[in-house]
Length: 117
Image 1 (tube, rainbow, N blue to C red):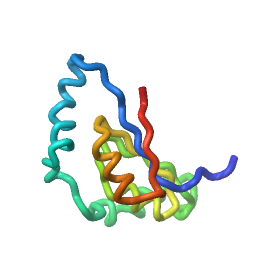
Image 2 (cartoon, one colour):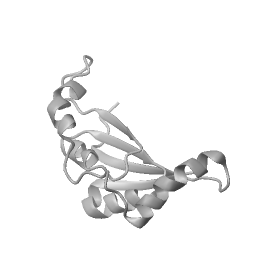
Image 3 (spheres, rainbow, N blue to C red):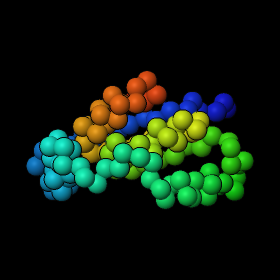
Image 4 (cartoon, one colour):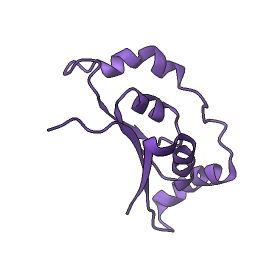
């Protein structure tokens, strides 16, 4: 099998209104919708930069060989396009459509968004 194409892909989960799980996510979705995202970093996380070699050296393949990297609750982390720019396939999942749309808009064609139902 050929290597997966590099890039970052965002998915956001469709929710059924009124469920307890969705109610727990509502505050996060509202924060994104209202721009109250002081937790969001505009630069690559320094811990990722410091330990990138450990992430890439999985003991199975050469560190420079493209990896598939999963980002749960990714928001619009700039770590995803950073890793994609190094040739890795990055998949991010979030509960809110807003950060996915923002990240795709800010980083252009290297990203794609999908909706899980």
